[in-house]
Length: 96
Image (cartoon, rainbow, N blue to C red; front, top):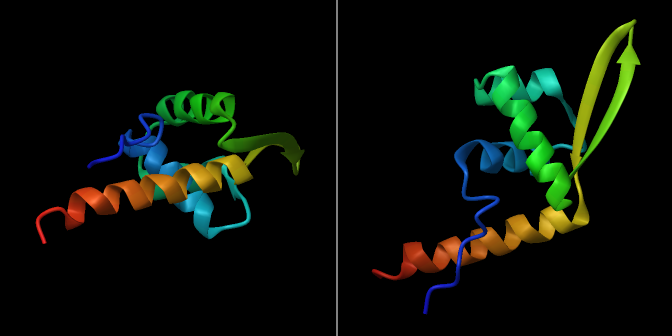
C-alpha cells in the first residue's frame, strides 16, 4: 500500500535544499545557508550527495572576486521531489 520514500530526500536538510530549489531558478550557497540555518560544512556535504545523485547542479564561479556557488535543481531532481511528495501523501491520507 505504501510506496517507499526516497532516502536521499528523506533527510531534513536535503529535503529543505531541494524544496528551496523547486521554488527558484537558482540559489547561491549563502541563500541556502540563511534559509536552512545549517552550518556551511553540513550544507556542503548534503549538496555533494544531491549532486552525486544527479538531483542538483552546482556552478562554482567568482563574483566580485569572491567564490560563488550557485545551485539549481535538475529535471531528475524535480521528478524525484514530485514522486516523494506524492508518496508522502499516501502516508498522510492513510487515516482518512
